[in-house]
Length: 185
Image (cartoon, rainbow, N blue to C red):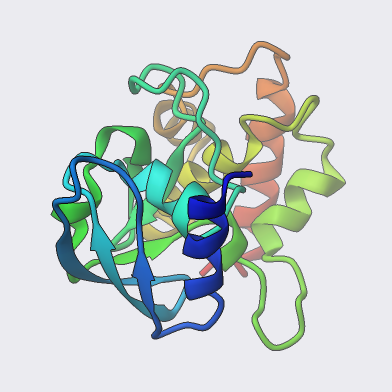
């Protein structure tokens, strides 16, 4: 890891601290983001995507970058409660928004997994696990909007996700189980 990236992460250790992000020609935009319940002031290069900022500046590597052009949905996070492809969003366009990543689903006090995450584990709804965070975040957005979806609703909500491991049947089963338990919000 180069010194510049180490410096970015050092600045980022506490919520509410200013974070300097590398990149571009030195031009920066100052924005405020709430990420997983923590407010950050960021000085961001205008070309940085939200996926880059989450992974490289904030160190939240649960957000995966698969294709980096919006085709696989591995980078899905929640932006103001809605599923969004973070590789397709410029961070500067997220000023004032609330972002939730896979790391933000667990209970911050106890560290207990979110019921949806637990349902994925209980149903082996992953194989290699690379796309699992994005799939989980899309399922979370669905269940927040519709706590009692049909199997067709789940399939529709997850249509943009591309998984080479073919664990879709277990994913649908996990989302339906989490919905039945009613603890998904």
